[in-house]
Length: 464
Image (cartoon, rainbow, N blue to C red):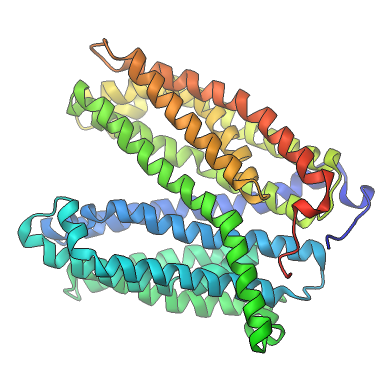
């Protein structure tokens, strides 16, 4: 049963609410940006191990999206379940049932997929077009990566629990430490250690073990030691109930989040295919623009997560207060993204020339940033709202919206640019689609807020 709290208790002064959302969003956004930077450094380091090492890592890229989808689903599912558990009982009673259930369910799902992938590693290598002499090494690399990715589940669950409890700083400390450990280990084992690309899965294993130890310490220091003792889950009946609850959370929260990751992968592939006819320079320029976009929109996920945590911790919140939380979050988002959009528009040429190696590539990148850059303010705010939807129990609504948005934007862009000799119409259409998508998501989230606040049953107790 959801705790009922008076509206005044859930409506602190406006300044305090802004501060609360920003305090949660800042470390989450910073940790996400740091993770992207660390992954880029790792790719650079792998490039120094030789052509074969970088080739194997590049072949593995499609699987990166899949594993990221699983990890994000498990991480965010834990975060949402813990935030709701805090709303039900701020003292933390029943918390270990929630977290251990999610951890067990996530481990089972991740292990099952990894075993399946390991069994079909050789056919997968052939399907990805691996050179005959690289099939064996790639299959071995994938199998080791499968094991490594399963071992990451425990620390990810504890980090998600910290974030859901409102300890975003501690969770971000754990995440950034793990990424530093991975980067350093890849460099040491792959270079001086002589392991080459095999250093990548080894680095994940080492970082996962040490990361688990660190998150366990942080969990205890933040007053959540019950997650480590697990007394509330003793006995087969309690554990079965926790596992069943964990699968329920993964199904309602994790599946649509993972599905969105896969949709993003398909979107990028479709855009690249459509741009190929304009030449390699256009594809490379688009890659620069797209990478810039990815870095720019990272804070949106952190902000959306902070808003969702605040809403989920509120329990039976009045609709007016939910709207107030989201409105204040959007004000923070607009204060970040409107200046960024303006800077990308004004500085499109400078950014493109700095990032591109040749004039044709710079011209394509500049065109993309000039048209799409200003509308990244719309993309950022839309992503904030979609993240909120995903984490308040409307994940399938968010995934459906993404699917429609991706299909219409790519389809319309392809139709408009069908007879063009250069990609400008394609980029301009993407920009229009970004603005239209932000306008379209507003009534969707209003409808979901009404459903969320109409009955407390829309936020089920994860301990049942």
